[in-house]
Length: 209
Image (cartoon, rainbow, N blue to C red; front, side, top):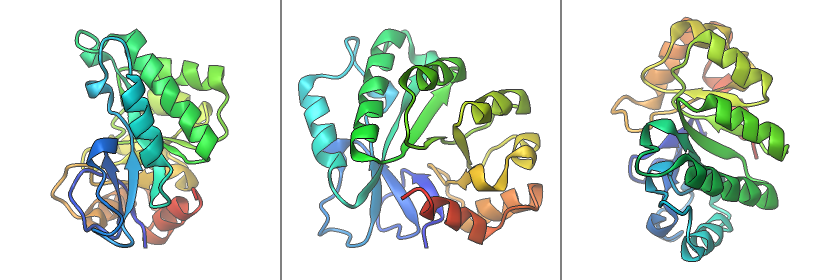
């Protein structure tokens, strides 16, 4: 049963979708039945965006049936001195196009950039689900994100008021790099929002695919 929408912890994690860089994606034979997402993190985007080799590696990895989602990808304004926002936006757009082509949802990294991500969603008009992972924002930001058609995933650290107001069908859970189990994190979320439980979280992931 898939419960964990996003983790960087190593396989095997049968309950999780493991996020990988395309060049670090394990062979399907290494961990049979393991699920993955693939993307080039905005921290790793160069000053000119993604190279042709990076785009080719991303697409080749994303075609695999055990790769269920695209990402993580997104925008991080705190890294704009290393990866300019324009380059991050070019890389993000490439992920969006791949997500739409392959009909796979996207896992998003968003730091101080919800305005850009919302704007790009309005511009691109994607059909696939977008999920901002590790969301810690206040309810005012959550309201804007939900109104734009973007869902959210919560990890070990979260804003309790935001969790409490998130519709149960639009909430996901993750460990990311936490040492807590996904069950511990889900239990904390359930204490904050009584409308959700483990079955609801699992159903939300199932409905993505």
